[in-house]
Length: 616
Ligand code: M6R
Image 1 (cartoon, rainbow, N blue to C red):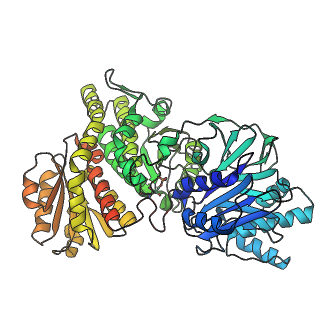
Image 2 (cartoon, helix red, strand yellow; image 1 turned 90 degrees about the horizontal axis):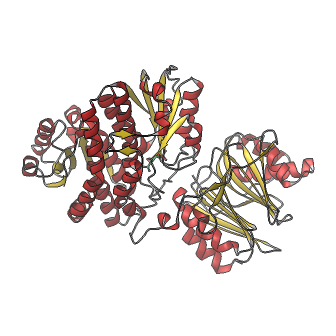
Image 3 (spheres, rainbow, N blue to C red; image 1 turned 60 degrees about the horizontal axis):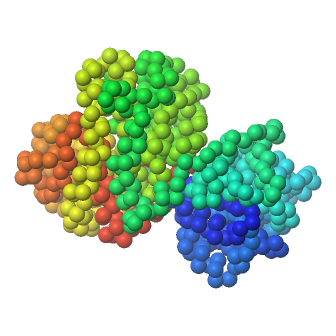
């Protein structure tokens, strides 16, 4: 949560930092702030609200001059989102200023000590405690800023990505990370700092991703020195070449990132299997799986850990792995797994799924599984993310940047990776015949074109359905088998972007309680594809119909039976059962998108949410 941006060099810092914050706004949008040094004064402006509010306030009365600056966009943890709690935060002397992404867990005991020593605090934040701790160390121990940051960080417990500036040393910025991401872009006599590389892709393609427990002193015209925070040892940083381009992080003519990302799914899935799935040769190459095939195929059990939409992808994978590879699978919320003393054996394989690769609960679950001796495989989208580095092996989804807070292409590409993985293990174990294996590859290769067909043929129809039900206070989503997790995902999408209460259930569970909710007002979205318990689902539809519920059926092309029962149907092309989630999820994404737009919601930045959840 929270996005941080910094610049030191020869250009005007303000437009770089401001645009950087706009690009990182997906990480949190409760408040925003910028501090600029113009050669004499430190000019700081911050406000509750979005980066657009900050821009208006800044340009009303604050000087935008200076070629060193830092900025922050916040997802509130400590303290309500108001102007005072916004970052950057000054130290008491107002010489130091800080931006911070993360949580200092022992801030309260540190604060008590500082109060005793005469420090005062304007805000309720842990960050203001940290900057005063740094100032206190500087004064007490008579050390330079870099050293003071290091000593102070060694007294903290928690997570951080920080940038600190001292107006008496206007040619340097100090950065550090533990548990929250921090990228440093390296240009010609200039440096960029950000939570991800998007704020500086038009300026440089050389980037250093600081590792956990590292800090760097960045000096104008002098370069960068990276050290371990704990023992001060020097680190030779690895400079990577950025693969991201500007087009990927812009809306490209769509009204919202979410819509763009829904429409990107055909290509995103192709990017996921490109170079890995060789349909003509009947093989799947995935180096993370190939290099560990014995370990993975001989797993007595697979435990999948994830949160939110990634957890739903894990539930789909449970059906796929058990069906194809015949390996027992358990799917756990990472947040529960990490605290419940789980039984993990050495021959268990843990698969951690995360779009951002930064989710704190998933990260903690991975660490626990590793401590208990499990082999951990990561499925991440963000290259170089913390989770991708913490796991023993893994496979990237290659979906490209996902900026809308509601996950769309991350979900379908995660399912694609997990399907390829299950197929590989099934083949290796002899659990699937060669012809079945080839057939699955051929069908998976056809999915992008089928998604395109759904997008082209149903969008307008889905808009009509959205218009009809946009004012409903509640909505139910039902599915069975491989499509039960899709029902959960459909409900989550509607909840998070339209704020309509929605629940997903296995269709057959209705009669055990939820059917009491059905009346003539209740819309029920039912996934009723031809493959997969069709007759049973049709019976469930009858049960809802006889209680006057409104049915929106997701059906296979040409279906007549459900059409005759339902108020609306949305058709998807036929495919094998295990791949239907890749198609059935598309109309549900569009339905929630259109309802949210019609209700005037902020689709890409829904209230109270952030894209990467780097706090517990
Ligand atoms: O980055 P991750 O996949 O680990 O994120 C997990 C969840 O926070 C995420 O899927 C969240 O539920 C989405 N906003 C749902 O659309």
